[in-house]
Length: 141
Image (cartoon, rainbow, N blue to C red; front, side, top):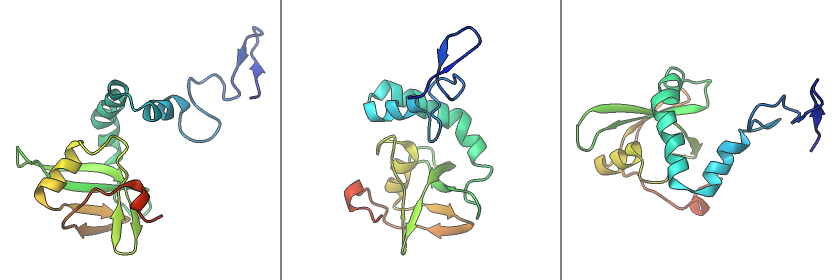
């Protein structure tokens, strides 16, 4: 790994010393959290995303030129409508949504309990029926 020296002669990573930020790709610290599968660390990231990142993402998610999609679902207990940004990949007539936080997140449980949801993906709306959780190995590439 290349090392740069700052004015004080202290070594710092080539990315300018930003904690965890790699020269390309996602922050290394975030990747380490998900690889660890340690629930307290994953829950911290999940709660931050739910409170801070998701409201910002919802402004563009689901649009034709944005990578994120939106799952519109109804609360299984409250009956309230919700919208959650996700990453979805289309393969034929199917949409695949990775579950980095596991299967026990609210939007997933709500969609399964209701037997479907609406997904905005690349500018189009899709009514889904009979959603299912499948192992990653069975998902189409």
